Figure 1 (cartoon, rainbow, N blue to C red):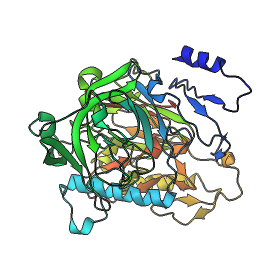
Figure 2: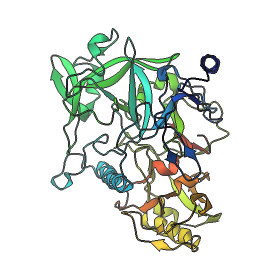
Figure 3: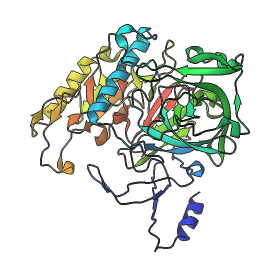
Figure 4: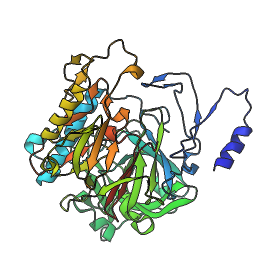
Length: 466
């Protein structure tokens, strides 16, 4: 792929206004071609000048993280310039935090065994996805024969994958009738039966699925299979997914959702025989940089800090870990292990990390003690440890180092982008009752290659991967 990319670049005249941008990460070895247009993106340390970076032939693009030889696709922030189909309206931090509270409430309800819709929970979706707007990262794949390029959000806490097959105006996005390899499942097929509460009966003798929401129309359609193309050399035959056919508006130019959860319907479970029910991903530190998603375990685990994986029989979708302590500026806080006894979910869709109250209080106290040179500010929604950085260059702000200590002794240092968001400590106290897990959100996962190896019951973290 690199040779082909360099050949293509050499054929482009320097007089052309179209500039080819190549993103190469030593960790991800990701190579992409983007069209660069006027615009400015500011991050704490870098100014980016691209308004619309589109992957060219992204389905044929191959990125190979050094930790694995499995199929890898670029992973981008849906609101960033390197997203293949950038969303147009980025939510504010306040909106993200409100959505994050709903997601946390959803997790609490799942573990409380009250999965049905409750009269007092009308603001909480019965499933995650577009209803919350918390899914911030996208990949581009191909579906069908001939291949139709699809930009899909990823969700490590979702199982059923789906794509739009019809828009409100009747224009076709993915048309199963034009794919020679598409086949809907019959109502008696095992694949239909395993949908469980995601099943929605039959229509014209074909299997139907449903994902319920309380604040927008349900996601419904036909459940079938087709060929999934991850790269020019990596395909998944008979990939199971939903063909969404309801008349809900197509949101933010995203074509669908790729479920990466732990239940039987997810892409990871479907490819278990080939890739061992393992995958990894790296969430980029800014909207204007890229990460990756890889199927399969790493060739060499020496670069990973590993801890045992926790699974919950009543909620097989989720993957979890057991925190043991927190380190701030090299000093272990000595939080009682009992504070973390319920475990923590690892989620790409949750925004911030929510800690048990005793753990959060210890972190907040230590963090503030290292930030006495800055004035404190009022809370921003659920973020209650905030500071006044007015007039300061962002690179001049000193932020304490924070590390998470996991079961087995793994000490994972967080990137600066995973410690502070805006002007606040990017953690909050969980309000979950005793016995319900807390959540490690995507902010804290930035730049880490997160390995979820269900087959070996291991979660790994490789720092500085993207």
